[in-house]
Length: 358
Ligand code: UD1
Ligand code: UDP
Image 1 (cartoon, rainbow, N blue to C red):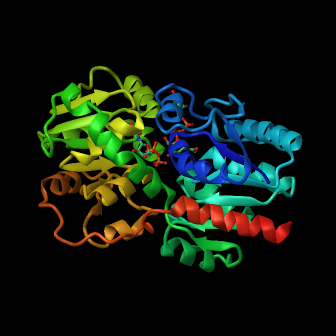
Image 2: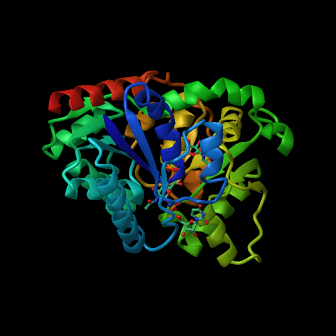
């Protein structure tokens, strides 16, 4: 069967890698890159490292306001779907590429499989929350990473086509972790020693698009007087430049360009703790057993909070400093995200769905 998979942003490249491998055993997969992320270190590097097949289409949409970006993607994805006439469209996560892909497919009556369905932060000011809710309500096959996701869908009346598949990012991590430890040289390159540094990532508009908030977070972290490695997302880099070179980073914050997946996994694996507003990094930290301080007031990965391995510190200076100084959590970690094999389980659910319609 012909399946169009739509990706566009960094975390989607990582999520599609294991599933693409499974799908291509039995189906013709047409990979479409919307062009939402386009810098080599936000896009091409992941295709190389994760050996993702070259996209059949790169729609080259690029950056813009939400309406413009989503609208351009909608138009261009529609063109691809009209030309390819697939039996199914797969979308990943919660970005504008996800929503545009789902909407284009739904309008053409092509069934949609949503990978990472059912997540909710219950914060509608997050653009991702709007993308998630709408995509779930358009999808025929809802591939949930967690039990909580299943319950969220049930609460919204979505009970058909729902599968607890586990999280495909676990497959990506397990496939590449050993390789990352053996090959990535980031610790040597930056002169770091295991457990003697923190990792910081920041890119949510709520943190980056306010001068006071972004500089407040960086000041608080700098004042912890710890070595901090900060691979800077391009959105954040633009803002940091705008907010003024006079604001020198305090403490020992080492900034780098966005890292490839292997270097990022290596860096995270050796860290004492991480501070992040990323969805994916919260999960990876949990799986790797690295205490996580989430610089947000809510998270869609609520399970990680239960046993102290993840704490919501928001952007409050005192809470951030307290979380950095806190002893490591004593609680056991549980296999929250379904263990290895999510990609296989997803491919099986897709096969069953397609053969039931054939
Ligand atoms: C997007 C997703 C977010 C996801 C994140 C992953 C939406 C609404 N947001 O946020 O859910 O967590 O990707 O990283 O879809 N830029 C570059 N080069 C690039 C890409 C972006 O310079 O290759 C800069 C541009 O100035 C752009 C800004 O980053 O305006 C934001 O990019 P965009 O893709 O709109 O949103 P992200 O913040 O990356
Ligand atoms: N990541 C990476 N290099 C970086 C920062 C993050 O490879 O410099 C990886 C990270 O390990 C995780 C994914 O990108 O697998 C998370 O993507 P991001 O934080 O951009 O988006 P989110 O998960 O918040 O949507």
